[in-house]
Length: 349
Ligand code: NAD
Image (cartoon, rainbow, N blue to C red):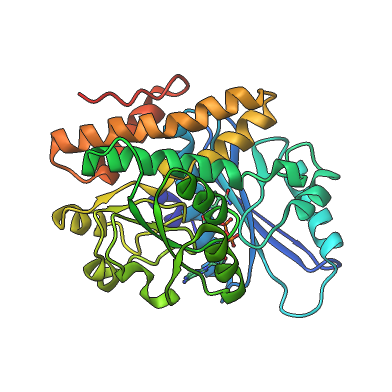
């Protein structure tokens, strides 16, 4: 375990088991130089403990970079709860998880993630002060969608030289909590939508509402379009999928879109502009952090909209350096972390 932590540069890993509720949870804290770690709590089935630990470590590290580039006063952390194989009492399990989070005294603040809902976080928040997303109105997804929308505008401006999304063709994978409000914004801005989702009823409903064309889930990344927006699961851009893309831009909300980070270079070589996932999808983190720290909705909206400006400067800097935007994003995140607290400045120089 320490070798894994050494290679990722993680500060701490906490484990907790509770026989009565069946809770088996891992909290990974990557870096707290800029503030307490904030990150979601994932509740899914893992093949084994190693897979759960690796997921927690990888996601916690991603949150550090995301917070640094979004310029929020948080470090990176993530929790994973291994979903019990048999029957379990959900309230008992999330209550115990809340006590676990509380026992860390604020080093880690939890939030919604894959497999958890705002009502689960409501249960967690009864047992700890260090929880966000604890009611439906605190769902970060619409804010993530706003940030992705701004990011798509910046990418279209940079790659296609267009100041509007009128007539821009977007292939959107996944019309869930983020994909749906994103589709709404894109349609209102005049984009033409092609949609896919493994949930047939959901995608038909969205297609009818937005006048969109539907394609099979396996076909969406192969559509000829301007923007491919992955808003389903991570890891969908493996080598073959990248080779099959027929778009100018990849810009979506999914975490860890690239199955392997070296594919950022492949996309760059193919002339596909890739908006780094942890930069474009930071709206939810901005909402969670600023809301938790008592900021107004107007301030949250202003900062979320700035994701578009950050990406515009990032793309410019990447262009000047002849490098993939992902590499530039990492360089900037490291610069910000080395400085500790303070504003993340993404200059074009
Ligand atoms: P969600 O579960 O509400 O929606 C995901 C949708 O994608 C579902 O409708 C699902 O059926 C569909 N889907 C899954 N696999 C698919 C596939 N192979 N092809 C087509 N459709 C597929 O999740 P969400 O909250 O909308 O999040 C979407 C992505 O964005 C996730 O990767 C998540 O980690 C990431 N993300 C979300 C937030 C947020 O605020 N919700 C913040 C940052 C990142």
